[in-house]
Length: 183
Ligand code: IMP
Ligand code: MG
Image 1 (cartoon, rainbow, N blue to C red):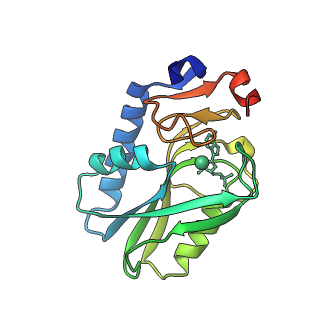
Image 2: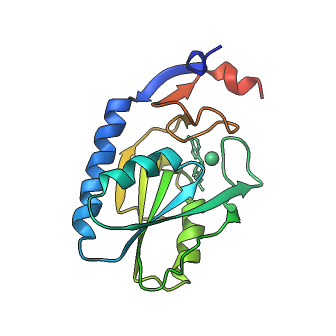
C-alpha cells in the first residue's frame, strides 16, 4: 500500500516547493551578505525544507539543529509546551540567526523558541517558515521570510507529519478524512 493513496489533494506540488525555496534562499543570501549567518533548523519538521533551503543559499553560513517536541497537545495541534530534545551545539553570541521552521500555526512553538534563543544574545534573529496558517494564530509571531500562506487544513509531506508519518512525501497534501479517523 502506498502513502499516496491516503492523500485527498495535493496542495503544493514539488515544482511549486522548489520555486518557493529558491526564492527564499535568494532573499536570505541578499539580506545576509557580509553577516555571520547561521541557519537553525527546527527538527524534525524542517528537515526537508532545511536540506533544500541551505543549498539555495549562496553565501557562506553555518548550520545547526535543534530537536523539539511539543507535548500536551494532540496529533494535529500543539500546546505550546515545548520540550528541547536536542539543543544547539554552537554558542549564538555574535551570530545572525535565521530559524528555519516548517509551519507557523498557533505560533506557540516559535514564540517560545525566539525568546529562548534571544536570551543567548545573538546579533540578530529572524524566522524563515515555509508555511503559515494565519487564521490559526494565537500568539503574535513575525516571520520575515515566508513561503506561502495556507488555509486552515492539516497538511502533510515535505517534512510535515501526521502521527510521525508522511514526512517523506515529496509534495504537500491534505489527508483523506478516514486516515485521521483510524487513530
Ligand atoms: P504551533 O506551535 O501551533 O505554531 O505549531 C507549530 C508546529 O506544529 C509545527 O512545527 C508542526 O510540527 C506542527 N504543525 C502545525 N500545523 C501542522 C500541519 O498542518 N501539519 C503538520 N504539522 C503541523
Ligand atoms: Mg510536528
